[in-house]
Length: 485
Image: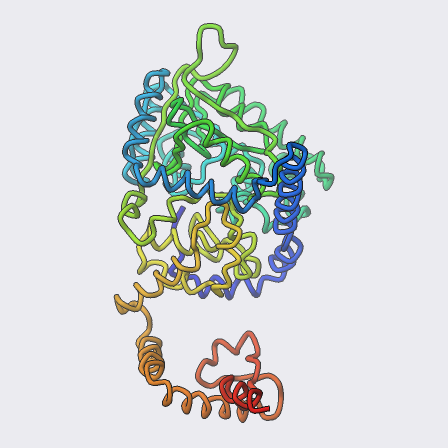
């Protein structure tokens, strides 16, 4: 997927002006937020009821479950090389081949080589955001291998002209039912339908021939299990199982950080992931895939490959952003982010949108190529407060902002303003006097109204919003007056 994060500001303007997109985002806004909140309340209520029935008062709350999930992920990251070695040995013992990829180019090279080795001309795909990082579909097509997306959302985007996803778990959240109906009628040559079950059946009928004729299935992996050498896939569509069991060749492409030590650890993370992502107690399908097809097995691949991808991940192990490797790609941070809810995912210009993308994109592709993303946050901590593995996203965004200033990547005027503010902040008396003058200036600028329509020092900021006007006094002055009473 071609990165366009350096054009973030212009892309945001386009998205804000897109009436249809804004209507779609408004309709979707809060859906996953409400579902997660209900799932958390239900979890806590059920846990309390179970504890009471057993005569205990130590119910495991969802907050405690988040602590446990964060601890498991941190345990892995602390000894990542060890767990990867254990996984590799177990996977090989079960008949799989383990390959390593430093970057997207090596992911493509490995996958194409596997396809050529087995004479593959068509590959069906499911659940692989990392293939977007590697731009795998374009590489397969160029090598003469037809890639077919089978997740319904990704399939819609593919037939729409290979659009990128706008959300990691709801990739077509930006499209309306009517848009999908028009697309299917044009692509499939059948009468236009607007009934959702009829549309999904039509997609199933179109994809069935691909399932039966593809020689290779490509999937991602929600988690790799070191204890078994297998992969766990969490989906709400049955296509994932068809991709991983029908073709003779199954290729799993996933990041090196996705590993878990044991199946017991997986059970803990599976209590967090669906509740955080979609508000479900559990997904429709949880698949544990280990090894190749045995003599008594009715289905399954005869060849299983794991491509374990770095692509910038190992560089975070000794960095301030180590906690970002705990991410389990649930999407909760973007679901709750007021910025994402307003502009959608495409504005971010790369694979991962929202708060997680505002951290990952600069780290994986270069901070100078995504200068605006760390600024695309109110730092309200909605994202950090719902992250199932407790990643301090606002702190990481602030650290990226600091690095931009240190490397002089921010505009000179902005850096000068920060220096002036820092100088004043170290001189409380002078700061108080300057704040008093500035508050009165803003009050004058409002002209007696409660809003400042145009702020001369930041005209772009007030071009799309009004700045609330102060009451002519600083907080300190008002506090002193209140205490004086």
